[in-house]
Length: 168
Ligand code: DLZ
Image (cartoon, rainbow, N blue to C red; front, side):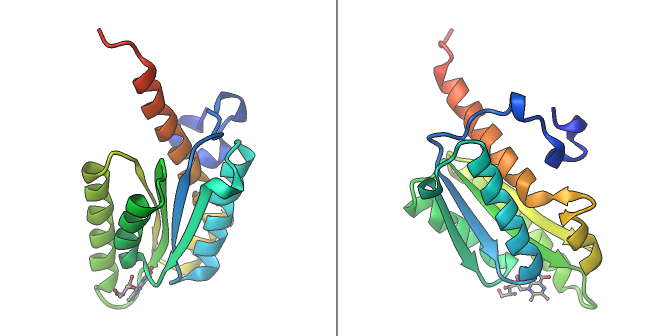
């Protein structure tokens, strides 16, 4: 399984639900694009590897992580997707901007999960420096884009599974 949720990049393919027939939006922040585009690539490849069709994956970019909220909302409303994966990387700077953006994105994405009937996956790194981000975008701590895609598939499969259960 997912190594007890320490590093989802090492998940077991044999227990993974198929993503065939699922439609995904991926919204990617351009800020720190070296990191976020690597995460997006990882997410897309994982979806394809697990059966999603290229034509069922809708990738859109936004300027920074703060815009992930509106971008994800619009993709949910206009692209008829089963899940939205929001990908961003917020790196600690010298000012308090970091705190405001992190908090804003986390709250905004949480609210989307409550408002809409599809999962919005929080694929946002919040790190102290660039190296920590690189370690999590294909480096020694895996690729958190893969993990976001894995989570999206699991959540869509869970919802579909609930729909198939007989009501008591
Ligand atoms: C302004 C800003 C700063 C300082 N740092 C980051 C960051 O590390 N990661 C990120 O994704 N975006 C950053 N931004 C941009 C904001 O997310 C946003 O695009 C602007 O504040 C405009 O709304």
